[in-house]
Length: 555
Image (cartoon, rainbow, N blue to C red; front, side):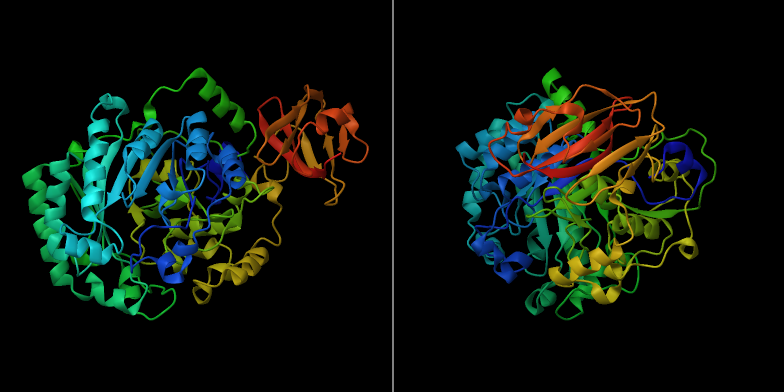
């Protein structure tokens, strides 16, 4: 990892500061049976595994000190997540607001009371304005129940002061079956007093859904959107309609399996539309946090090692490159699946990028070869196959924004970049998870995870750090750190900090699990009542950053 100065001198290496939004797949269970849902098609929404609470906590402790908002499951129905109340308690502890998409079937008074204290934004899926259309698309759903829950929610939302009030809206998946009702859906949102309506084109996964895709009837799509625009103008409500991208077109005319687009961009007649944006309200993430919350966030930041935040937007930037591609997901967001798998986004076929199951570290995954390669290829306007034709890959030409996105570094051309790992080949798109794990191990075979969490690549910025250890008896040596001090922390998964030493002078000190150097008492290590392994971390006191880590058996 490079520091800010070297990032300005060298080409963009793909490493970034931490994300600001995280989607955590809290459940795959759902109380509906929507025919366009991948998990329903696979049968997983019926058996509905939930994210284990200790996995949620382990992931949250790494991410929540940095992010402003988290999004519970967008694959299953988030409001039926097991231990959801406890998860919201963890979010509240870190001052993180929830950004939610729900089918709204369980929005009763009790549920509304549970979510409101941490709610930053909520979108309810409404794929029809009539009971017949809605209940055909949202099988097992009832439109009267959803609308009744929305009315109850809005009566409570209006009681919240405007700066803290959550953003509310409807989400519609647009297809042939409901194209004629889009304008009516917008009027329903306005009547309810919602802030906005978001519309996304159906991504077809079966032959039935491919026939429903408006990629096969652009004229119908255009008429539906024109009617929606007129309705939004009439009602004065914010309307956002996603572009029909070439990736969706490829899926609509493809077969089973994950299709790859051969072209970038979107269908020219169906680009992105946003209107009445000034009427939409800001996400309430700027609400003041208590001193205790800020303390928890600050402490959490000392336990991770990310690239420093991007440089400020310059007033008179030098010309960097005429334009680049970027993606909000690869730069600002992350997606953590049920059992810790990390993927760049929730788009079908997004590659496996790592795993944060204990003792996995998100700060290493976020800047590993998979993420770096995908970012570098976008910047070079040569996206990896799974990103081609995706609407989330947008072109940026503003020089100040380019410099900010790249942290002041210089873009590399496609010819300067390393060859793609096989994990990102077009032929491997949508591979089974077992194959993905094999390809990921191959892609990361030559990587030292420490390089992805230390600010100068192979060394700590103050005091050389090198790791001489086996998996069972980790030993860490510090060399040339005569004026620096470190502390060591021991953690049991899901239990939080177990022990923190005083600052230790870094003059050739070594820690060995077998000899219990540093005189950490056995009684301290045995305080925890659960778990058989401890993760330990070495923190540089001068800058609060982690410079080494490992795990040992419980003593």
